Image (cartoon, rainbow, N blue to C red):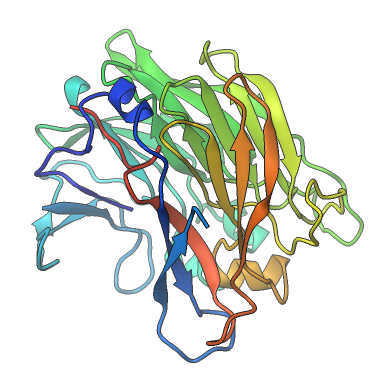
Length: 355
């Protein structure tokens, strides 16, 4: 994940202004051929919806874990050096987000590249090759100040989301393997985290362990009212009212594939499960793709057909699949590709940071 840290981080002056933005006309998706058997360059898809940069480092040259951040020139992408200014450095890294007014950056942990690149192996979890910690950094001094251990119920904390209020001192992180949602918060001058949602694992014939939901993506609506997240293995997409962030209330759930065999909430046969999600600034349109990582795709969903669909979200909660919007990335002239992360034309709910 990367953020440009030298210029204003948002097109808009405040979350309230962003809520009034016009509907997006185009979407941008990173589409990969890795794992599909197609020998062609990856590409950026543009979808008609009407019809100095900081990069987190995941590992070293040998595929071992290596936390911290690299700074790239925002125009040439030339590597300028490391972001952190000495001091302690985590052994693992993944997502990060910052709150400029509070002078803090938070980062999460995935695992060692040598562990996850080949596919998932439970023995790698037992061996400590996947993460379970959150890290809080002094943004101005670029120094690690506090690490919070989430433990056995917080394995593989991936996506990090602050509330959009620029004065907020709390947000959410999803622990993928444990399938738990955590609220991180300021606590007596430091930082801490509490589990606020748990998705129960399900016993399934043929599986050597109970199937976790596998929370792979999450986001918060621009008005900080709703939290959305995807359970890639179970196959459900959830919406929670987080008006009280310490006590989320389930307000919507859709079944969009998955390994559990639940009836789908669409009139289409969906392969894979909901993975990356993106929400329009006004909170009314949620875009969903189904590709996670090529080796994991092939392991859990052999022959995965990649898709993009849209979910219409009610202003007071509730979700419905848009029957008129569906993009099949398997059936295309250049051969199948896999759609991953979505970005909206005029900004969205995971790219705006207010200063």
